[in-house]
Image 1 (cartoon, one colour):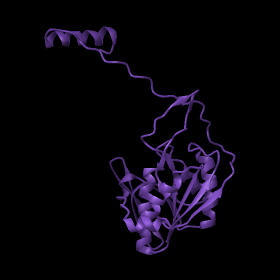
Image 2 (cartoon, rainbow, N blue to C red):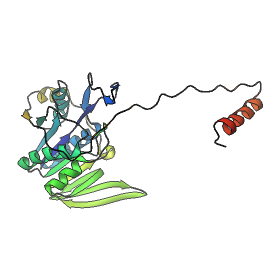
Image 3 (cartoon, helix red, strand yellow):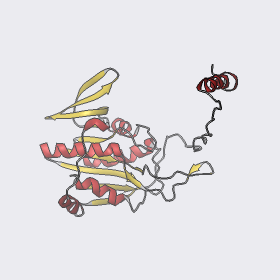
Image 4 (tube, one colour):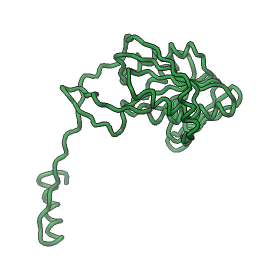
Length: 253
């Protein structure tokens, strides 16, 4: 089974966000692998171990000194190779344009399974892989929490309100993964060393026309004000004062 895993690089959760003139200042950002995509890599490696084949990681991103280091972490847990699509003006909030580029690369590979995280933790759009499925004319199951393979058929479990939905689809197919799908393994030292010899193919990608919405302005949440200390000599007096404030100033009772 040949599996293509879509990898998105997102700002590290410890990154400090600053807004300059209504736009996010990305200078100094640190990036890492989107956590949902790690579950997709683990599932792909499990399928390779069970059925043979190859796991190819595909990422679309700008030039970044951190990208190779992060991608080799995924090679260390069992992926075989990386196709790194470098785009100078890459943005993570353009799923339409990004899906177009990724779909063209996937046409060359013709994998049995295309898998990735349910969403990126930067923009939470949940859109790129469904768009890829539409462009390639493939069936798609979103938010899978369990995935099984029997021959050319996949069985996907997904959580729905009040229960579990079980779906069967034939490969090739597109699957997006939820965090409960598996436990991502820790790479052994020998696998980390071996990952340094695995190939990363770099391809320069020009910008593409997009139908995505324009990000007009960014802003941080308003600064929270300080709390109010309620005065009173007894608990009863403090409760009475609290009720007065809620009724007369906050006007919520």
